[in-house]
Length: 144
Ligand code: FES
Image (cartoon, helix red, strand yellow):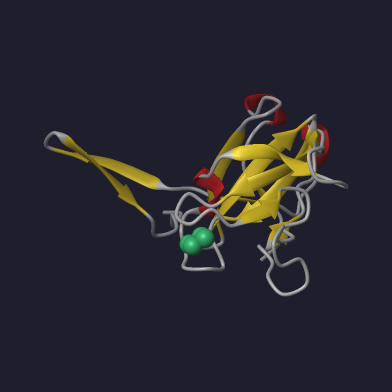
């Protein structure tokens, strides 16, 4: 099975937005930062929070006391539970850059015409209606 999965149209993810997808049993956040796409595992390495639901912000740095610089271009993702921060582009920890990392995944943008050539796998989910509830079946679809 190919490790590449088509998950959405690029146009469905506007600049500054994110989406969370399930791929190969993993929850992955995809972020559009200025037209570049980045993927991060949706699990904080600290205690497992849904990392990709956290706030996004820039960085603040200072070379001397009393002066600071806000860099809106370097985007950090903050864990919603305890505030650990990671660089969206690399998964590198802001506070522990050599010891802690959020797993990053490559996100490619490919023209539709190229996708029909394969090999790609589209994730499918069976959905059925029972009474008044929608039930999502996570087992892979089987052809009849
Ligand atoms: S679970 Fe993410 S910082 Fe604690």
